[in-house]
Length: 154
Image (tube, rainbow, N blue to C red; front, side, top):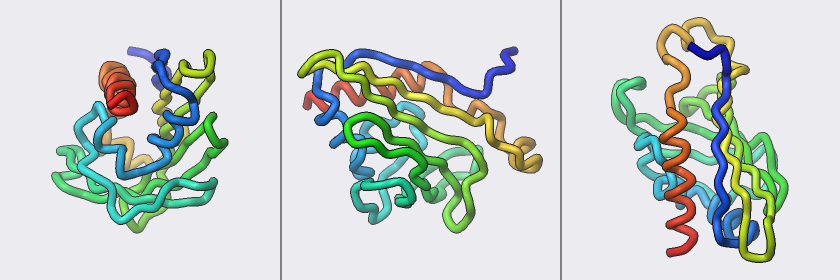
């Protein structure tokens, strides 16, 4: 068993950082790239434009007893380089887990995409009893990168 509190995967995608960032910053696209199967769709969300934005997603998972909604609080934003957010059940404050997308151009039409799922700031003891972190596996994160590559191409 690892003591790590984060999983990071990466892959090169044959599209510009601007194209990939444009896709990621639109919450309507997130269900198409989600490799976990939890994301069902966005809920009336606008494009992510800055740190402090909040976007909502309709979700489904046994760990939450079925269907639920999350509010995602943007914690990192650098156009064409970085998007990060902390997730919380709708109407609550984030509990400490964070999703991070980092983009590093490898040329005009190639980008190294790094995707991190970090639960290291989760301190809520009740939540830690209820949810067995990591809730999303390394393979599911890799699937998200594959889905992203296909979706941006398509």
